[in-house]
Image 1 (spheres, helix red, strand yellow):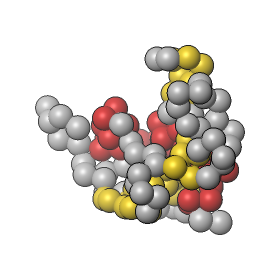
Image 2 (image 1 turned 90 degrees about the vertical axis):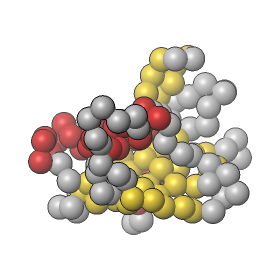
Image 3 (image 1 turned 90 degrees about the horizontal axis):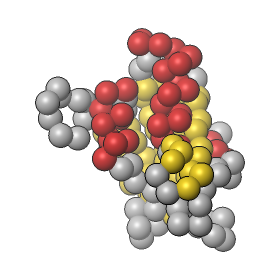
Length: 127
């Protein structure tokens, strides 16, 4: 099963407000393990995003030796079709610290699948 499909299935488990689309994330470690996360947003400003939940699950299981190879991030529209989902500034910081060098795949606003390599975190730099 592709990482995108794992992320899509995770997104279907999200609990979000009407203002935010359900999102799911899936990551694969260098050892081949898959971790997923879904968005939990109880109201404005509380809860957590799918990407951080997946990263936290992987770190909790694998510890400081965690090496992330690839990540997929998927959002769902009201009709259940994939919509744009890009990491926010906070998530980019998490990625830089916990998944440097990983390939991140996500949907652009036009629906195209895009990917980029996560840059490492530099202390003192803005993410």
